[in-house]
Image (cartoon, rainbow, N blue to C red; front, side, top):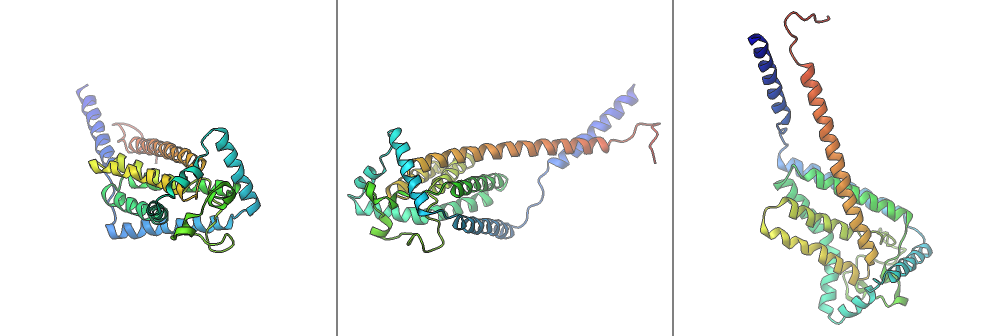
Length: 282
């Protein structure tokens, strides 16, 4: 009996040692190498996204028709107020210029800084944020393909003004020129990416200053609406896509952990020493 207990303890000790070995993090590459690899990957994905989005340009007739349908939906729910908010903001040219600049520059720069911070300070959580960004952008791209939508600035008959052209800092030219698909208003990935930045900062940073980044999606929302680049509905769809991407990543992570745990268990069972007197097949 004592011999059986000793064998069981030795076996459990081996399991604990092997489980600990599996749980240890792998050695990471040097930070400059990780920066080059990650931002090279994100840059390639961004280029692919822009290329695909440009190739999915719909006709201006379909895009404007869909825009009028979006306005009808917002009016039905009593939320069509974009043109009134823009008229109110136009009383201050400084506000308009600030929001024009925020729309143009903050989208990519703050997102890039957030991912650089995550890679340096929270490398274990970084892949999850990257997956959420990719899933969110892929869903947005699919919607761009099936639902071309003209932004409000293309509806002057409804009182909208293209503040970028009027006050400067417009990222767009004529609809027939440039590499941008201007009929990709639905959803607003400006707002979706801003939600990811604020969520990631508040979730992973212990600093009390992290809550300041909650202003980023609020300022982004103000920018996309008052510059007449998006509707409220575009932002609402972006919020739904962000929540879906977070839940998709959570499900994928749980499945991966289960599969890894099952693989570790199988490996530990296979490596168990054969009991004395057992016949091992050659």
